[in-house]
Length: 409
Image (cartoon, rainbow, N blue to C red; front, side, top):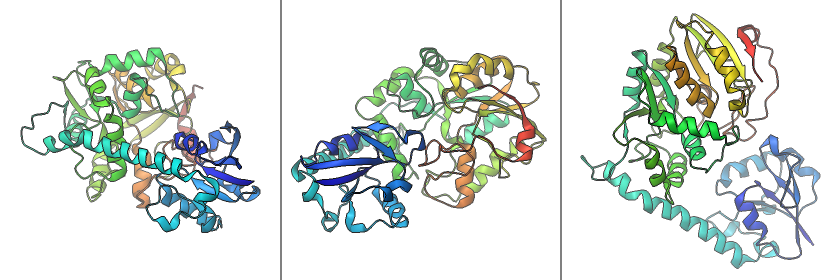
């Protein structure tokens, strides 16, 4: 009997498992998500990459199209290349071992089906991308101002609530969030704020409904998938198509761009917004916004309210009650996933200047390192990166610990 390891415990792995020959056994699934280690998936346990050497196996199957980074990681652990199967590799010479463990026709059918789906997403969105590049393009899309226009509004004292695919998918019942379970009240509030017209408050949308100028392939592929199969139509039903929205990507100035030459000035412009101001950060207990870098070092003072790292909306009433005790002269920065969208709005209603600041600190960390992929940052919760949610409960940074005024878990 042949024994295989599968890398990544997801939808592709389920499909691939169904293509295995009858005398092949899955001994374990390898995944970088530390929160899943020890779980059962398709009848086998999920393990970290560091435990591969403990397994007796003939082949390791990479089940994701993004296999190149995983190959690099496996090389570092000493895995022989001839024992690795990469179904998404374009080179036929890399198909060693396929026929030993898979019904190859079924496997190729599934891989081809997935590639055709990705092509269909591209073709479905193509008219909108082309139309956006033509002056007075004829296809209707939401009115979303540029990142620069959004920055100007923040300089004028506006508050900001942001929507990304996480918020929109939650409203639409397509929730893939790793840090917030669907919540009926949260969904209701997210819908309400999308069509709100609160003075001195910006509602920001991802600028994905036209073209993808200067965006990298990972970004394009991700959002084409979001818009496909009716996603664009569902989003449009949520929006006020006559409302002037602002740009969610103001907090994403680096990672997703092909030409990153403007990233430094973007970060400097954002830092100027809190120059010599007193700031209050409301964040997840392991977010640690600005810790270990100089992103907020120019603020006059900083205090922190810590909430749950996951499912923060369960503590929403307590978080809001604590937040409204803040001096209204302070700028409030919120990094709490979907909860931040609602909290920034409710604080703006009560006369505070509050910004849903999202992933800005993590983007800054990647910028400082000059890297072009999502990597974990030591001591900080990074839900988008492999191993990024495996974070120590406490850190020894004295300044950070002295800034914490309350913990709401």
